[in-house]
Length: 189
View 1: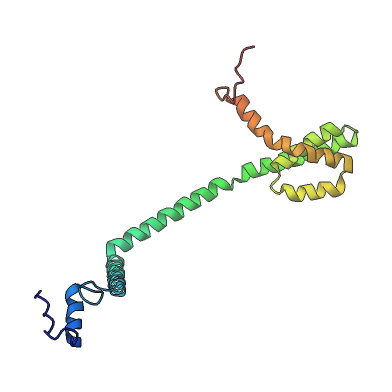
View 2 (view 1 turned 90 degrees about the vertical axis):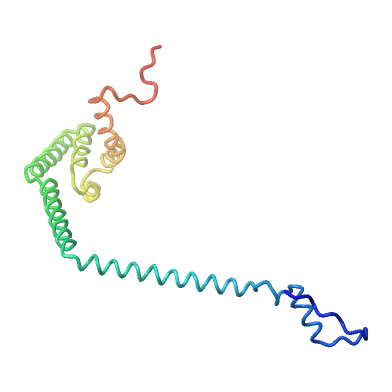
């Protein structure tokens, strides 16, 4: 940068050009430093260019990948494997022999519950009806039927038994797996 022009010898009568030259030489906002708007505009433009370039990169390689014959072959093989796996799972879930056994158990428990209720043994009847609820596929529907068919006292006993039914499988698991210890059950007094 050059040196600033010196003021004319007259003293107070400075021309306007001299003031403009002084401002630009001193580095005011319009001089050397770019404005905040300029920096933000440049950043926005760079970000937009980067996003367009990345998007173009993604589109280019996606088209290249989809056009590859090996990719299509691998995709077909993967879909076949998933379909066979799903069919195998479906066969495991729907086992007619297990379903028939559950239906038999359900009917047997309902019949035993009715038998004990008809004899006046409400505790035994509720025990068997709760077992039927446990193996039933739609327990809410069965509870609605029980609500309309059972005496209110027996239905209330059955409702109190439901939380205990849900905990029984956990208790059975603890009994069959003696290594499982919960809390400090092994204390010696």
